[in-house]
Length: 573
Image (tube, rainbow, N blue to C red; front, side, top):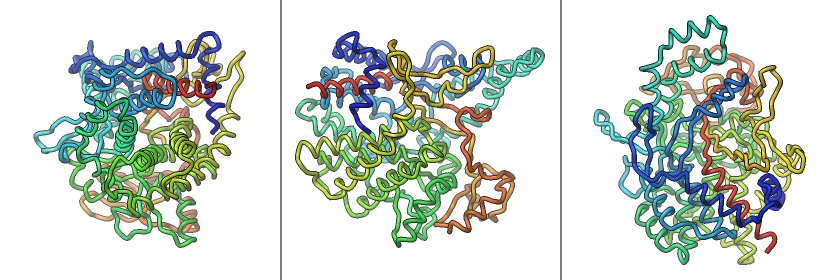
């Protein structure tokens, strides 16, 4: 992906030709700061959201789409959410904008408060200062003796809605007036406990390696931010446990251990071609997973409030891309003096970068984003996250004339080829002219209609800075693991079930164990699984059945735009 092209598009969208870029950057910096919580506050329904001092705001919304009322509900009904991802990412972006671009030095107090907030997301079920990070902060459950991660505003808000909403009365009224949009929203909130029960999740490698990447960045800029690096180091005294966890929980399909070789059936569907090629070449595979948890631990922890969605791990290639960035910066900036980047981790690193390259080259990201981008449905976010690693490698290569390890050179070559080729071609082909600028359509808002039923244009770059670079983390309910081929169905208590089991139970996990020959797999695609045929074609996130929670963050949008413009200025200097 050519940085100049992307930044030129963003600059057009911001209307920077009408005012100095430095003024826009300064305005964006203030805008980002305005979304940082200034106090710790508990949720008080229905008037006040809970906040955590130093953390940046993000919002949970529902992907309702279609009629103007559903579109309005998606855009304006939001639950304030505090999570580690937003604050980790925004803090990193502000430091990068200063270090690699021409942005002003970020405010010290603002950065210190963010680091203190980030420290709350370390897994409290492990020793203090450990490397495992949670998406949400944890509360202690006395009955289970476990620290449980969950979004407090969501849980409290849903309980309040369910307690005080007269669902039956409203349903009768809406049915009388044949108001389908209102009925759809009522149905969602009536069943909300089912959706949000999937939020009691373990630590994840996404936030874990965003934190590692932030630590590496702070160490590389220690001369400019000595206090900030010292705070990070003090809060992360045992961060190297992240590297141990990476090895322990990697997906190893050729391994004989179920903890290593079993994976979400949706993951197997989209990457089976990659695995088949590796098997034919006599290669083993080790890949970054999403959750810092395995099946053995799931059997014990699930009933205690720490559970992987569907009780099985997966490979989300956006999580993988962020993990690769964290590993890359940790190597380049010598985060640790120990020999942590051993052959086992190098194998995971090399295999995961090869998978990312393969998926882009074989168009899997475009054809099945619902499976390959499990929690980040936007393809643009994925390409951006991959490009970050190429940027840092390219910057180091240009500066030093070399990279410290051959494996980093290989990654630079892989990513440069597919980003400047396939990815750039895709992105540029989707640019739509609009007067003096361009706009890009993703799925949010792209399934909306006006009152006459005519399609409406979704979010786009415009002179009024109506940019929406949404995080769009999601928990999809369109395609679930039990609709895909499986060779391992088991209750958490250890009871193994036949692969033709047709009745689903919340206490079972459904997986692919090992590698299945393609001919056998194709045969499995011809039969039903739990009464449904496998969805071999993606119908889009605006399918009538595609209603799911997703995350957005204005602070994230503005921080990334600030970073892009700060680096854009380098092109003219």
